[in-house]
Image 1: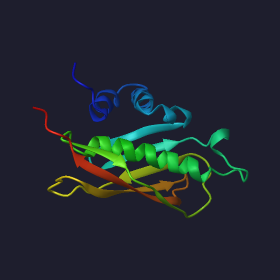
Image 2: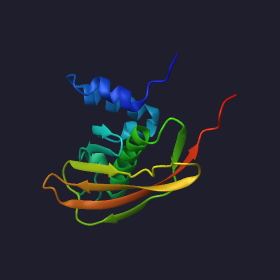
Image 3: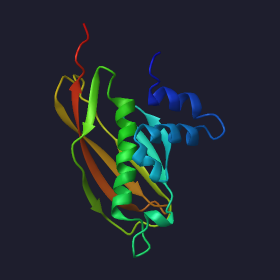
Length: 158
């Protein structure tokens, strides 16, 4: 049975009522930890992905703002979707770290946009940065996050 890719799943469901929510929920089960994060995949194409996250009580810190690690969770979620939609099936990827800068207090629903530029010749064994910008409902950039991913060619099957 062929494996259903995230881009195909998202493309098949995005135009249906609740389709994005269903695709987001299915994607979140791929890494069950994300089931604890109130995120939704809002847009997906090679090179760009967008996701949003509600500011629910368990994402807030003692100041009433969205916790820094909750913002990192949103960034990692959207980075993974982007990598799945962008890195070709001949390659695999894994995150190698995260660098986050918090620019303003994060309140309310947050929207994350992830982007990556793949080189024309992807080759094997290279680190590529995924840039994530997180904005609040007033379109203020509250965080800038970079997640380098390690991309390698999949071994050829005989």
